[in-house]
Image (tube, rainbow, N blue to C red; front, side, top):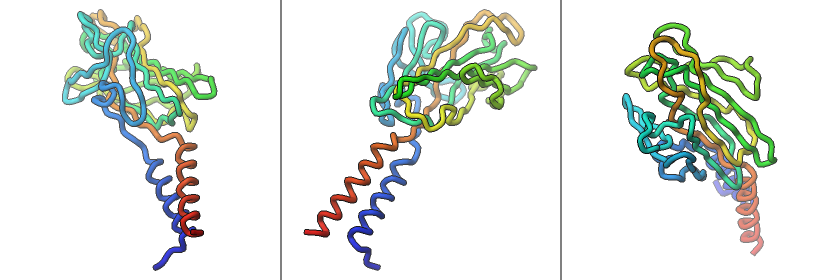
Length: 229
């Protein structure tokens, strides 16, 4: 079947939009390298690095002499940024325990999104201790604690303490996304002598839609010009 040139332009444009709009999974290795999926990663309080426990490799902040090596602790943060903006499709954290694993407290992760329009939103994840072997994580966004609770891997010794989170900031274009830890004095049980910290297993990003649309329009115009010639 022969497709008219202008129809081909539209078909290719839509195809590229469909392909480009697919989510990109940015791994811990990408994050630790400082760049991946069109995002730039930086750390405060230490250097980017990875940590592997229980078969899970996750990215964090390496600090010499810190007991939570390559985990994002109370003195560190890890930021993903993009000058053109990106849509957060989701992310997965690791080593987020509820105590008493390793003397941990109920660990809290804070995720701050700063949007391209200058506004911001803050999400807080807490691995809540209910009883031994539970898997309950609470989610609060901008102070709203009515969000549905999240499930995590069973928070016990010998597990990676992972939690998968979806597109909690909607389709808003994000300029920077910062992960840090919050203080907690709440214990599950046990010694509770270790700070709140965690690492990032992966981030899922979606390309900034405006640039995709412009690319499609440009491709369509090019093919139309060729047809006229």
